[in-house]
Length: 499
Image (cartoon, rainbow, N blue to C red; front, side, top):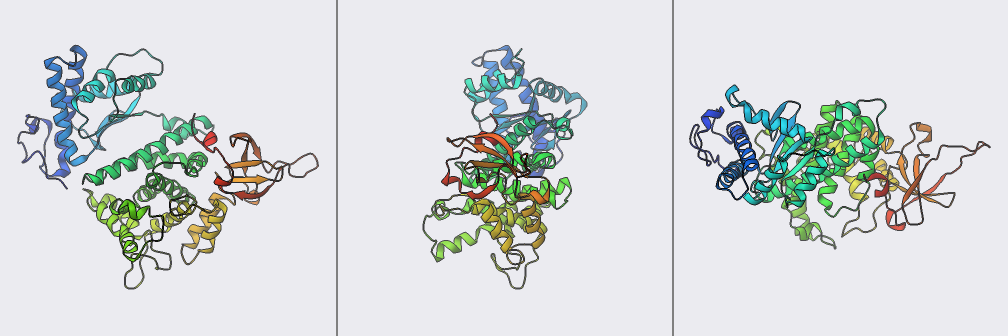
């Protein structure tokens, strides 16, 4: 971990101000946000007010923006990206609540109010965005707006101003509709899409943090998986459908997110508490983190690995555990560290890494390993073009029960996914092709899911319940078999991705 850039308690920071006025109470990196967070908010407030009065080229504005940039860089040297998060009426930086004395509350209250006005839940800063982008962001973010879609208008203006590295997350009234019995399907679709996109983006940030020798931001992963746990407990269909789309450019990012979704689905069906469901999701996000230390030419080699390359690949669980051990509070990643270490250990203790005697396998590992194998077997890779169909992958997992996988986890997973998992392309006896969009709630009708019939161009159209019968009592349509996505040019995104 990088050394504390602020030096001893009470010393002048790189920004030139004495941090004692902002409640400093310790010099270690564990207390960096406690010490410098309020100061950063103060500089953000000062710069925001200054750029609204003066042009960006004015000396006062240049000084204010530069001071903010220096403060951000000082935080970023240890934290990497710096996320300012609004939670009801509290403000946090990277999940550390900002606590200031009453005389210093003005900047905090100002930022809370301004974020609420713009329906912004999170402002995510890179450690060094550059003063030009930082100034443009401040100018646009704090400008007055009368648009009805205030967040959409703000996002458009920031893009037009060339703000690329500073990212916003829209505030979502989750509690209102995720606990509503009459949940709006459109809202669940939007929430699922946002959660999936945020998770994939976060995994990209994790890789960049490791490349720059910074610790990963576990608290941000917690927020992401808590959101997905809410969705899964309400209606997991769209999230599982999104996980079935294998068209992402970055396999490593998407694979980790897909495994996280499927792991949380299993955890929920096992009856785990919501907090544990979310923690399983975090562990799954980080399960392959050790692969960031494996050369790309080995990861993507189209031919079989030689002995040296395979030895290198077998090291990635240990490398992942070492990477997570760099997190400041090791207690917060104990479960995730063990999942990273053991996710290639089989239920019968075979696999790798090897150890004398039998492994005591962490309960989360038993969940994540099933989701990991399923997603890997159904996703095309450079070295594996002929992937298994989802139902075939489920049969493989079922055959591995008791040897490769925990029998209870296998049973729950197969039951949750159905005979034809959401996202599976099927051929019907009506000579139509369709994509499975929802499982039938009756166990006796698991082979008759709800499907979206595909037009000749592969686009999802009419929704059909295959349990529906005609006047004569016979089923109107039935599945003949499943097909690989590549066999039929299907555009599953038409159904699962938010338009």
